[in-house]
Structure formats: structure tokens, C-alpha cells
Length: 508
Image 1 (cartoon, rainbow, N blue to C red):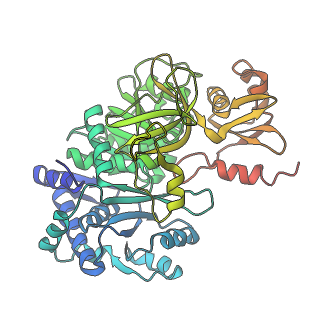
Image 2 (tube, one colour; image 1 turned 120 degrees about the horizontal axis):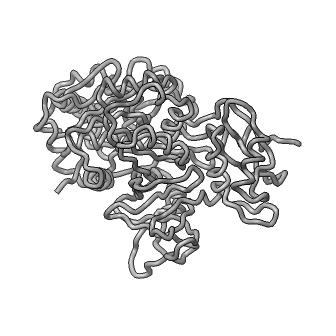
Image 3 (tube, helix red, strand yellow; image 1 turned 180 degrees about the vertical axis):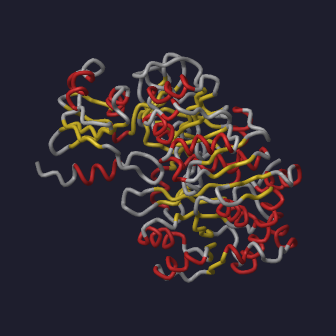
């Protein structure tokens, strides 16, 4: 019985010692090197921190050293917390205040950040840690005492109060996810993963552990390549990448630029996407260009260990159609709740709530927010059983599949009608001249505001074509054009920035 993700690494080190496990634009590591370096890091942490099940910060970059550090921390019996060194220092300070970590794995250049936030813990230089003498007895002693509910990582997400929340996930939850991926999507040692997601974004968890579990390979694609699709496609072909688990926006960039017209990725066999609603216009572009590839729509927030629902795209969709988020993974139960009432009939909206092993432990050092989101299952009065309330609305289709509707806070009352802003977005995003768009409701002026990205301003076209898809009361009242919409670090449209800059201070 697997109880620790390190069992995956041990197995792959044994079976594929000379195989390239990790690579980036500068370096690569075989499984044997991966194992040896992470052993050394784990030994260094045990000697210098003396902690167990405690947070160890890692200043990350798009490189294999970040992943090797993660495994070294796991071997020390602690959990890793990836922090992008490009974050504003104030945000780093808030994260560190929440964690109170005893140690951080850094490079020389990170000392400046730690000095600025008055970090008092151990500073473990990566370059020195990988040369540390391996203490096999200490590593074995840690492993023997570990259990599957020990924490593996914490990833920080935005908090409504401005204080980031650290989602704490254990080994068992990741094992549950990765075993499901291997079985459901036929992952094996031939898989070459093209990593797009930053390592402080939970999409990367699927790349890292699917690679390690199956003895595959993972190439960390340079961020710059996503601004130059020709380089991106060349990278896929050169590295023989056959599996990508990307944010929807990354696939949308390729479609926006019509990049597949010139060169096709030749080795891709599986494309998975998540993070935002996938416009069928974008998906159809990819499906037309690469019809033999398997496409999978994934759904799930960080708090339930990446994904709880999936849909293998198995039929045609019109551009204006909604794409299912599908069915639950094994060992996960999805409850659509209207308040405390279970919804089972098609067409009725309810909040997506999740129960099962996939649930995170909660938010680190934040009991109040944890209690709000991770609460007792209202359908079970007999014994303690937690569910996670996602804040997302969905419904069953006549086909029995689940369809995402919107965030609870995207539902508005406008001109006497209750409107799901996501329905407006689906319609607008299906228009051929729209690269991307999102809607935010301006409560002060009672307007639906459309922020859209396109080559040129096209308000008149949107009004003309949009009324063929939407009733008049659902049409946007105000249009704000962008040649490039602002994006969050995790490659989602930055709705908070748009609202703050264009609505909150709007005096009109």
C-alpha cells in the first residue's frame, strides 16, 4: 500500500536509473541523479532544521532544481511551500508570517528578499545542499515514522481579505489523484510531459507526480515560449512531448495567433486543460488541426487536490455550446447542493461540493477560513464528515454529465432578470473576432461590463452578432477593449484588477 509519494520516486529510480526524469532549457537530471540530490537535500534539512511536518519555503524558478528541492523536503519529513521570487516582497512577507518557517531553500540571489522581510530561519543554499553527505539512517528513520496524512505541500491562493491562504495538501490526497490519472488516462513510462504551469500553481502537481509515478519524463517549458508560439511548437517537437496539462489560456494563445496554421505539434497524444472555462471555439480550433489527439476537460480547485471532475471530449460541439466538466474521479463524490438540499434533477443549479480523500487539510494557520469552506456534510447527521464548498455553481445535463454554470458571485439580478454572467461570456467568446472576454457587473451603475480582447474595437459587431445568441437583457451595457487582457500569474484573466481599475473607481 502506497503511503508516501516518495514511494513513486524510489520505484522509478530503481526501474529507470539512467532515464532523463527532468529537464529544462539549461539542465537535465536522470532518475538516479534526482534520487541522489534529493537525498542530499533531505539530509541537509534534517541536520539543520530538526523539524517534522513543518513548512520549508522554496524560492522557485522554471527549472528542475525547484522539483528536486520539493522531493528533498519531502524526504526530510516536512512539507514544501513554493514561492515565486518575482512576487512583491510584501506578499512574500505575508506568506512567511503565516508559515513561520524554520528554513528556506534558496539561491544566493534570494538572500536579498529574506533580508528585506527579516527572515530568521535557516537559509539552506541549494548548491551546497545537493553536495551534503547523505545520512541514510536519518532519512530511513523519517520515512518509517511517516503516515499518509502527513502534509506534502502548501500552495498559497488569494484571500478575500488581502491575506493569502495556504492550502495544505497531504500525501494521501496526491496519491489518490495520481493513481486516478494513471488509470483513467493510461499514463505509463512513455509519457513525456510538457510543463506549463508555475510550480506555485497546483496544475503543476499533475505534471510532477504523474511523471514520477509512471517513470516518465517532464520538460519545463520556458515561460517566454508562450509568447512565441513557433518556439513553443518547436520545443514540443524537439523534446517529443506527448502530454500537456495546461491552463486554458495557454491553448487560447495558440488559437488567437492561429499558430497551428504554419507548424503542427507532431508528438502530442493527450491535451488536458483547466483553470478557466474552455471556449468551444478554441477547442474546435485544436480539434480541427489535431483530430487524433485526446482532449480532456478538467475541473477542480486547489482545495480538493487539483481536480475532482473530468470529461473526455467524445463528440462535436458548436462554438456557442457549453462544454461538460463531466464526471467525478473514483473515490470522489460530488454533491450539488442548494443550501443544504441535494440536487439530482437535470437543469437545476446547485453549488459544487466535494467529499472524499481529495480534500485538503484546510488553510494553514487559518482556522476561521478553514471552517467556512470545509464544513460538515449537511446530508449526514450521524457522524463527522467534511465537505468542501467550492463556491461554483453547476447543473446536471440531460446526458447525466455535470456542466459548470458560474461562480456563485457571478450570478446577478439585472433589469429584473437573474443572469449568469458565464452564459454571457460563453456567447461572446464564441464570436470569431473575439480573442477572449469576461463580464463583470457594475452594481453602482447597474451595468454588465464586457472586457474583451480583439485585434480591433468591435462594439458594433458584438451588439449585432451578440443579439443573435443572447436576449437583449443579457447583452453587455458597456464595452472596454483590450489588445491584451491583464492576466494573473496563474494565466487567468485578472478580474480583480479589471474591477479595481475600471469599476470601483468609476465616477461616471
